[in-house]
Image (tube, rainbow, N blue to C red; front, side):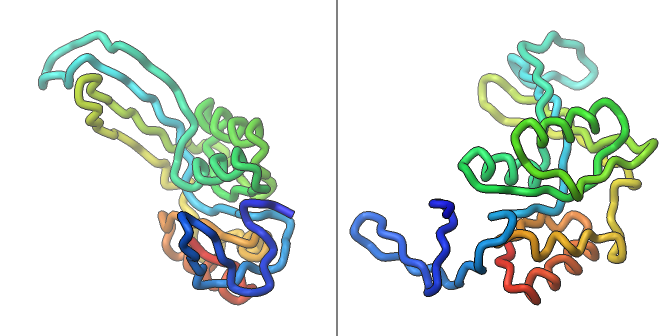
Amino acid sequence: MNAFLPDLSVVGHVRKRARIVQFPFRLPSPRKFDAVGFGLSAVDHLIVVSEYPRFDSKMRFKEHQQSAGGQTATAMVALQRLGLQTAYAGRFGSDSEGHFGLSSLKVEGVDIELAEVVPGARNQIAFIIIDARSGNRTIIWDRDERLTYSFGEAPISLSSRGRVLHIDAHDPPACARIAHGAKATGTILT
């Protein structure tokens, strides 16, 4: 049994500072995964600069790091690191960034059976310029339209594989279809 998502037959109680907090839901019976996610995956290029650059200027950066990102993919990795069993469904480009993002999930132990690589598509990427003094950032991003899911392309089987389904609602018709499937099977939706 997973300590993070215990198998509760009644509404769960958590003790916190001598208070009892009630969850307004019941967790579904154990399934293959504790949490499954459908949504964005990206590759972020974090660029730290000593100060934000002036318009029409050149400057040397202090640090650069390429990192796997995206709201849903990051959430599944975080939950996996906490000891939950997770799965991710989403699309990756067939370029080097797509391979990097997909392999990053695999290395973390996230199940990627329902992840897809779209031939010829560029993976979603972001260049994040971070001011070292303030921590403020600017995000410049792009997503190839071929990574978009239509209503009929949504991997509906994902909706019943986990006790909790996390979506980021980036492809609204596909997310709505999966959310309806989750509701029908008693899966908690976040």
